[in-house]
Length: 122
Image (tube, rainbow, N blue to C red):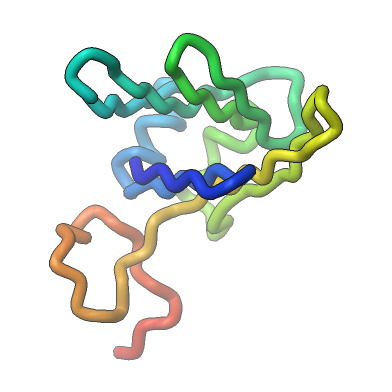
């Protein structure tokens, strides 16, 4: 699971296995250890919502995904989901959840579990 935070935006990209695990278990998470603290970021399936939501509590960022879209996501062509979430302070938080595609440049990162890039040439 890749997490990108920039300003008031959160973007998460998932490998094939992670999308499958989210569909199977309704929850996945990752941890980044800072020595004396740990940042946890998670995805959780949630009933009763129609779009992405997020919360930050006790050092944990959780993005909630509508439970009705999670089971079929591994097998359909939907790349991802996005939402501009209104916050109580009048600001907005942009949320983006996507399948992770293989890079078409020469990346040194292991991409064996990523989705085929639709922009790659055969």
